[in-house]
Image 1 (cartoon, protein in one colour):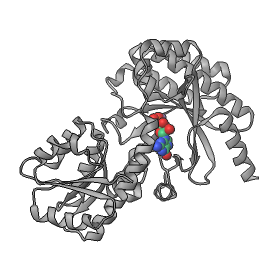
Image 2: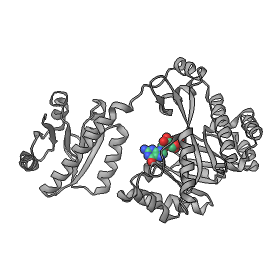
Image 3: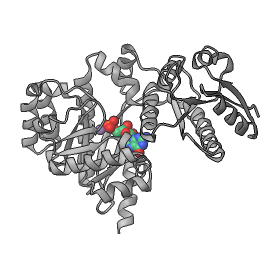
Image 4: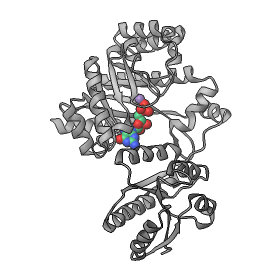
Length: 397
Ligand code: G
Ligand code: MN
């Protein structure tokens, strides 16, 4: 097996010697020590380390600057942050690294025992191995305008449905439509095609197609006795267009689906602009029975004051806060208070992105109304959704 190359960057020679002593006893590890971040960065393409142990406070440059430079060099290995500063500061820098696309696999608070170094190291290396396997699959180049038009003309649009579950009884309560494009080789995710949908000025016709499919499928579910709600993601700007909104209304009334089953999700990650441009259309939808949801709450640049201007019936708490919440004291504080905020505004609260029993339990105990996350179900194509609903029916009887 090729040895794992570990680079240690720290200005303190005593610390470097100590780490060297510990790592020397570890099998399959090859260590490079550097007390100068500048020189270490200069050499990094040659040394190509799998793992970097990075001190945060150094006179030449801070660890944050080193992370930014690693991002510029497209460094794809793992980093372990090492510092005597309080954990909250280290966690903030870990998140910062994540936003740059640099992977931090561990945090080490100085002073630490050799055993702590060994266990952080082991974990960082395991995660690194797992990550490099998954990377082979996840990067898809964004579509160009002409590729998008070709696919849409060929009828490549498909919907995937992710169920949400009532936390009181664990039963399915609704589905969210998630757009996909089927190519010969794969099923493309929104990040691959939505930028082109906007750039080509196709967002309204695209959203209408998604809505039409969702409503037709919802009608079918209702006939089969599954009285689920259906959620659609819309761009706020489209709701300023009276004609677009009346087309939504026609679709619903033509299919005979009651608006009370429809939820329009507006993502907190988009600019909300001038509310007066679309408020009357939103109100018209609300007066028909439709619920408006603030999606990805806690993500993006969403101003809390908008909660006073837009009568949201529902808050969907962002996946970045829910997933692994119990392992991060900051996320616990944010989720607890977001749930309370939602409840005090009279909104239904949905926890999105929970992947574990711990995530479910935490949200359940806070009194969240719904749960939508991999722990219960991934997004499903139509036949799989039907099969899953039928199984759940079977479980109940
Ligand atoms: O509208 P929005 O982008 O928030 O839709 C939810 C997104 O989050 C979907 O793309 C869905 O696949 C994803 N998602 C939902 N639950 C989970 C989860 O538990 N884990 C992960 N990684 N993604 C999830
Ligand atoms: Mn959504």
